[in-house]
Length: 309
Image 1 (cartoon, rainbow, N blue to C red):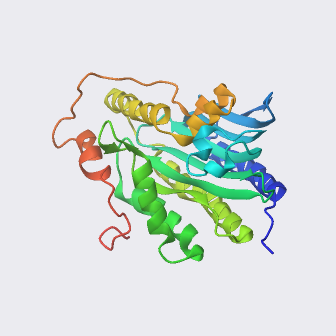
Image 2: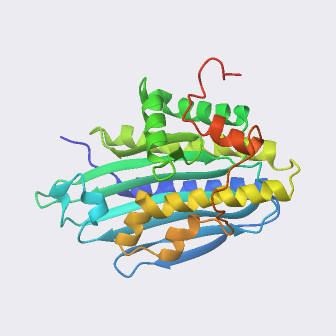
C-alpha cells in the first residue's frame, strides 16, 4: 500500500523553518526585526509574511509562509499534469528573498514547497519542489565554493548525482533568455519531485530548506562590513533590474501565485526596494563589474578541484 502524504507534518516543518530563518537573519542584522503580517485568502487558506526593512545589514527581506487551497488547479500547475485539471488542491511553502544594503553582500533566494491534489479517482497526488540561488553583484570565489559545497552536502544523502542534477536544473531555470545570461551563480532547483516514498521526499525538502541559512549566513558575515561607495551602489541597483525582470517574466512561483488569486503584496515581496535601468550600459573592460558577467555568471562548476579550498 502506498505511503500516504502527511500534509500536517509538512505544514509544521515549514512554519518552524520560517521562524528559525528569521531568528538567524535578525541575529546577523543586529538592528531590525521581522514584522509579522498574517493574512487570509478569501478563496481558501492564508499565510504569514515576515518582512524586515532598513536594517543595519538588510535593506529589505521577506520570509513568507503560505498555505492555500482551491477547488480547481491553476493552469500553471497542470501544464504537465492534465489529469489533475479540475481537481481540488492544496499548496504550502516557504519562500524568501533577502536584499542587503552592502553591494558586496549577494542577494539570496530560497523556496521549498509542497503540492497535493485529489483527482476524480480519489488517490492523492503530491510533489515537492524548491531550492536556493545566489545573486552577487561583486563576485568572490570562496563565497561561490561555500554556497555550492553546502548545497552538495545537503543533497548527498539522496543519491549520487542529485546535487549535479539539481545544480544544472538551477542553472537552466534561473536564466534570463532575453538577456542570454544567468541571474546569478546558481545553487539548487528541483520540482515535481515524487519518488513514491513520502518520508524520503519530505526528507529531501527538509535538507534543502535547512541548509539554506547554513549556506548564506557565513557569506553575509564575511562581506557585510566591507567598505563600499556610490560606484558600487549604482552598480548594485542596475543589476537588481535583472532580478526584477526574471521574477516578473519567468518565475513559476510568481505566476502560480497570481493565477491562483494569491495575495499580491506577499507574492511581490521578493522585489527589491530600489532599482535602476540604464540604457545599453556596458562595464569597463577589466573592471570588477565586468568580471561579474565575464567570470562569475557563466554557469561554471564551482566544486571542480581547481575551486576547492
